Image (tube, rainbow over all chains, first blue to last red; front, side):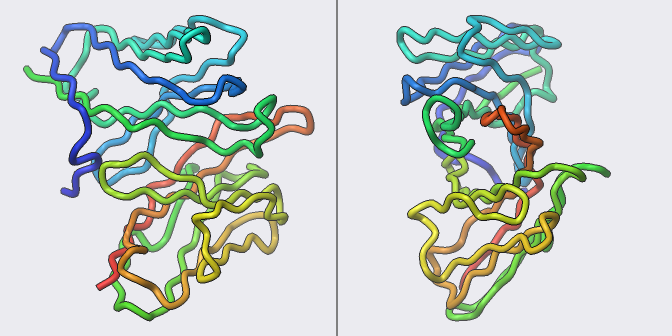
Length: 116
Length: 117
């Protein structure tokens, strides 16, 4: 099938290990952030989001951390599984206080490769 | 399937031809977005509708591109006189926005892959 993100940085992990994917965002006025997972040939799939009034949010096997001081987001995946292999994008929402109309600005993406 | 749907999934056309893509958002979602994604990049915003109104267009949306959402439900994106540089994945997303909330979760469709020969 067609590949998403042919030249993206790659994080390789062993099945069962924890994964941490990092992202820097650009606009200090952005107040809503989302992580998406994209598999080859598919559209981005929502994973977890966080608003700027929070530092941490947990979902099922995933945690997002937000550091507004250095404009940094991270996605932690616990007990990584082969099905987690995909390209992961962070996105900042330029709406709200940033003044935009709810458009998303995506980061460069990271390919996660999970090895058995 | 109650997610965002897009048709066609793949389109191959010759340079200079016109193409039209369709997006059906999640039922009841009042906001609809178009993005473009090239290989190795994240999606780039093209345009945004709230109900029937097109509220924002990116500078990426040249005069050859036009988008409509005539009844506030499905949307079409037309590219006239296609160029090889238009080859990309065209993604549609929808969200449910309230009067107060300007930022909400966007859910994406599978995309339409355009190849211009």
